[in-house]
Image: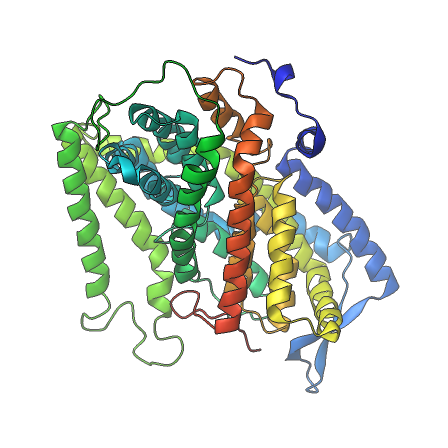
Length: 519
């Protein structure tokens, strides 16, 4: 295996690696930004910087004047110290993510996610191996870390068993899991995380705006449909032909179908069946709650908010769905023997979120203090005025969001950290220009995944490199990055084109969510 010194690469990738490694942890990036924010707020307050609120009026009916507020004022110091628990606990994404992960943690620890992904690809016909791997990889984002540690190395084994290059399988799975980070047929924990941040940002303009976890559902489903043939073509026609042949590569003795040695056991198959029935039961319950007397999930008053309770209930729906399916699977396989096992798995899932909780504490205070200073709203109003004067089309503005996200992603891999930094300015500013919070979030997602697969700072990049070195010992960081660059460029191009088409055609982003916004 190569040593760390052997994997240092020259050129742009080497510069990204060296520069990024010098950056502090994202938690301390937020703390540093809070320090900068305090200084800027004091200066802006002394200079009397202000703007007119776009939607609120004063007692005389005139537009409300927004004054920059010093974070060192007695009121803001008191607010910081007295409200610190409430600021942390009230961080919008926190409740969403913790709730979904309570259920997803059970589904992951019972083995449901790993078995489902393995079962989906192990019996794939040889000719359909790449699209099946790519599809399962993108759907595997629902399983969070399990997709990285289970599916990606498994893809290498499957390709080798089929007489194909194992690193091509690893590349296809990596492109799907990480490059297609937002692509999926259904919303999940990432949607809960991002829209929690979006809601906090949007409410600086419209206090009544509430997050809908399905606000990008159609968009991310279309991403999966469009990314699938791209990954398929690049893997089979571009990447694999360029990989150096490996000696001693195992070849399947069966011409048409891959048969790895480890097939799903009878208990695992029974568990998958039970999980499927449990998931179906949850779906039927949610449908029934829309039609039962009193329609608990439908506002009988009608109007634009008629389906709002249903949308807002989807976070709870995914929690219950993952919990029920995981419990059903575990009871069949023996990984769940009593209810105490479920409690233990939930506790372990919360333990896995320990770093996220620390990050959320820092991000919550940055976002809150940004709002207290009024700088976010002032920047949004003035920025919207400047951009409006340029008369740039909405599509161009959103493409700039995609490209900016892609660039920042080379250095800060955390989706929540990046969005917590960008949303407080981008979301309200683009709302003032007629762009909905859902559309801004979609543009961010289009740029977020594309460069995951080429930056050495991506947390799982070293792990993927290790998987590759099991098959080719001299495969270094440069080799992996060079292999993934075609995927990165094509996924970025397709994601950007999707943003343009969504705006041009006025397509809905999800149930009740459109690209445009009207104050």
